Image (tube, rainbow, N blue to C red; front, side, top):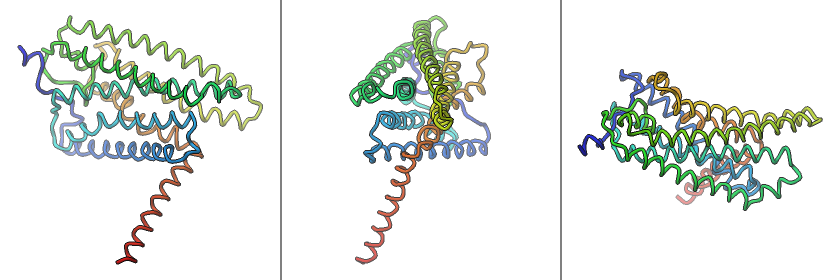
Length: 321
């Protein structure tokens, strides 16, 4: 009974059956993962090393880059390893850790995007009070509250999910461990508690989404009152990409967790998972960071500075030898 309730390992959904397609999937995910590491790593380094960027907006971008690295590192390397070694196996403990960290990073990123929307609202609608409202202590407290609450949230969901008896096999219809797929392995009446918790969470997220929509309505109303066309264009170029990413993130994630079983299919599950867990970490540096000239200059300084130091080191080594 113990073995039936708690399997030692799970079988993940493969992207392809043929070896050629498995290697293609490995190469594609490797490229996406390296792009995410490079973009978010440069953002982290540039913001941390440049004192001119120690402002609320860049503080939030630094946290977003860290969460993006955590999100994509939780799922993609294991999927790449499985494709490379032609296996589907993930151990029970690996699955528990994957669900916890994925839920933690994803929830924290969602709340961070809400905080960033509020930051843009204050910057555009109340620019004279921005320094007072978005003080350093306030930003740190908001970020700490988001991280702390999502940590407890992830612990609650993970513990509740794996407290259920899993008696419907060990095959998951996803390329990483995900709560809806784990719930499918439980008895039909045993996962009601976790399903209710997910429904309550969805209501909370919907409330945050309403707050987001109201904030952007106020932002767009303020932007349309800007007399300068260049000022309106600059404001829209800052807000619209953020709104697009948040909408994609929320819509795909919510639909993936709350879609009816009749609409479930392997290809749809894979597509939705890639859209809300793989694409945002890879494109967020381009959408948020590299559109800002100050950050681009700081990134370029980091790149050229490191290259110059390396050249000087090699030159000095050659001289000493």
